[in-house]
Amino acid sequence: MKTKSGVKLGIALPQGFPDSVVDVNLVRDFVARAEALGFDDLWVAEQITGKLASLEPTSLLSYVAAISRNIRIGTSVIVSNLRNPVQLAKNLSTLDHLSSGRLTVGLGLGTNTNAYSVYGLESEHRVSRFMEGVGIMKALWTQPSVDFNGAYAQLSGVSMEPKPVQKPHPPFWFGARVTDSLRRAVIHGDGWMGAGSGTNENFLNEYAELQTILAAEDRDPATFSVSKRVYLAIDKDEAHAMTKLREWIGAFYGNPDLAERWCIVGSAPVVAEKLNELVEAGASHLMLNPVYDYIEHLDAIAEEIAPLV
Image (cartoon, rainbow, N blue to C red; front, side, top):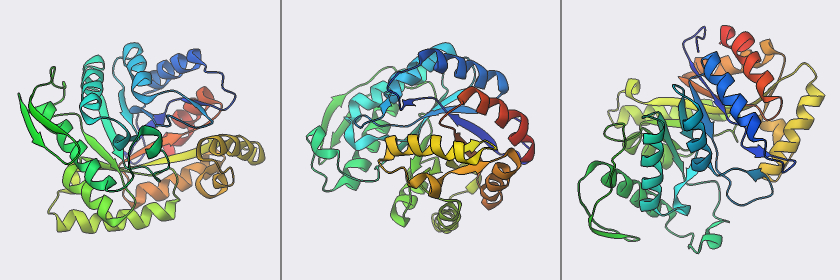
């Protein structure tokens, strides 16, 4: 999608349904409209358990891959510690084939460890588990036979085919908020996406730290994508918009009051002004996340926002 600044615009798929009625027709129509309007990519989040009726991300993207042709797809983010890395590598490699090499893999640790016991996991050493999983996936995607003696998994002569379409593998974008996780993103990843559960000010502070780390690690910023998820509502009726955002944020995050802190709300010029703060700070990509009137938001972003950012 053509924007004033050249920033790329992605969009979050309809994935969570507060009324528990999954609208597959909406998903299909949304994908077709987003691709026709020229959005750069379509994104999913992950919430396996919880009160919000939310579709599983890799399954949803398999459907999206089948009904689209050119638009990229991405996960933001899969909490990879809660998945077996061998199985996840297979799922994502398959998805890269089904999409003809259009996948971006967003991974993260998640904001808390409450779900670990549900999966039969201990929450200790989650960083080492995370990095071991990333190493296993990369090895399976790039080596004909893998020997790996880790703390959580041992592989001896394990092969996995087919390898992903993208070489050496689909790009990794990491979710990160603190210094150590930003450093992991720079060293082991291809990009960083700032959390939707954060303000513009949060992003600016994190981006400044990221620049320091890129320089320290001698990483060319041109080879590293920088994005942010933005919950937003383009709506002149700000009270109505906030009611809808509170409903969705409350169902997904468990606290509707967070909507006032995180979300950008208002007319197109008001929303564009806030988005431009992120672009001017250094974002090369924005993942915009409406939570109601999905098709209407696609048109408003293409017609009213893109020319202003």
